[in-house]
Image (cartoon, rainbow, N blue to C red; front, side, top):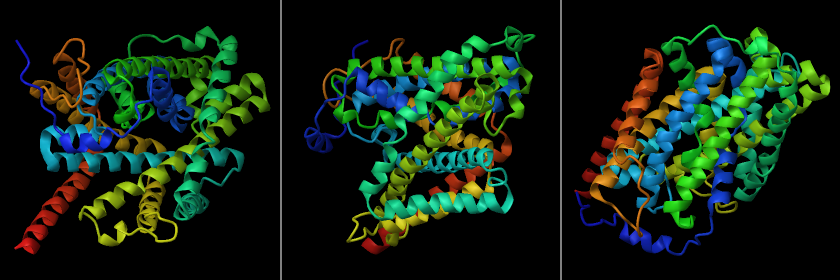
Length: 446
């Protein structure tokens, strides 16, 4: 069966993007994916996953890695067909139109704001280890408000100040983990890794949906598709290298923590890796992991405060939110109102929830977004959209997007009714806002 004639979906936008320099190769793109994906969550997940699966916890990482392998293959093909910078928003909007594209934008914002709030909770839990009581009750609320107040104040002053804070996290998040795995492996007790048999599918699915949070970020790293050299070769290779590296790192961290602490791992939910490091290396080892986790989460919070308010700004610019949120400060040249609004929203969300509950809500938003992107990859291939040159083709053809959709549906089936209801209410409000805006625009035009 021959392909239909190729379609260029964004001819005018493509003219603009030709000015971008295609300088990202396999190594730099793989490093970018690794940097964005490995966040503060891995410093907390070992205790949570061990609480659900015991010594078999590492299986949940493998299930999640397989699911993400299918998902990122869809991203790879879509990214080689749609050259617009923007990632998921561009892929979905190209084939399904502005309404579904808008919904994907809402899901992207939900993913971001919930993840932002979840990591804030994780950060406060880490501070609570340093200063007992700081992460409990009224002190926890004050701490969360102080954290987001600080980041909002920095970013309102200008984009350069916000960007400087992000630069501190890259080595700090990877070095302590590497030291923990390489040195801690010599202190594993084999008896702590023994498990009686396969865990229940429902338990494995529940823990896997939680771990989506730890693997998400690939979509952000692939957003600058207009600056990738030879994307049909670079993207799949970089994604493969990064995903293998991330999976090996996560499984290794889980096995070392489990091998050192055994059945007591779930009880160290504030700082499981620091507890394991303290067990074998003494206070200095625990301090290294605590500091690394805190810096990693600090950098993540800073980066999200720089990026996420721009989504509110864009929605306001396009008429979906009050115009006041689209105003740019004439002195600092930043959307100050959008930054403050995001800080208020994420503070309220962080105060009202816990790391685990917010992470799962973020994961549901991410999975719904990935579902749309997998469908978009299928449709982009069916329509033979080619915006520049020969696209990357997923081995196995249309079977991979279909498998990706099925795996995502399996993971979503492990969300409970209350979680799905929360996401559904927000999406319903977003749909009503979309049609209200269109109706108002049509009335104004008349």
